[in-house]
Amino acid sequence: MQNETVKTIIKTLITDSDFNDFTHVMSDLIIDEFDHSPAENFFSQDLTDTSTGRKFNLTVQQLGGATSSEAFNNLKEENKKIKDLLLKVKNDLLMRAETDSDGFKVVDLSSSIWEKVKELSDEQE
Image (cartoon, rainbow, N blue to C red; front, top):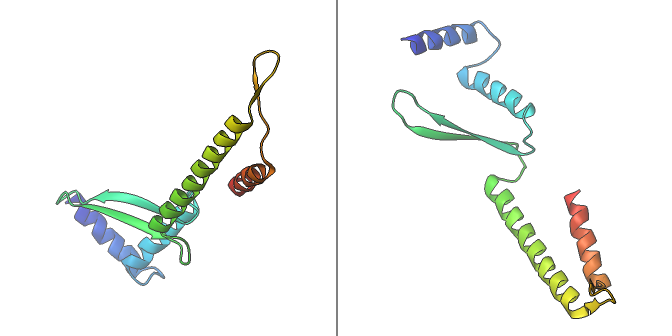
């Protein structure tokens, strides 16, 4: 019964406000939540209907921003580039390795690989 009372109070407050309807209130609250979150493009909240147990996911995304799927695919592509670069660095280091008088491996990096390392690390900053 408490939930019904809350719903009635909210409906009364909306009627007495500048909001058009409940969706307008919720949208405004969600935007406030988004603005105060660390999210840059979107955030998600899992919800459970206490009366039925049904589960929902509410995702809020800024228009024009990448979807969660696009963001995930971008991360996968970036991860692949980093792994490919790491393999090139490893192979290059192994190919060029020399042993110094103390028995330590000494290596030099190819400038093309160093430029890629700098490029990728600059994208991260």
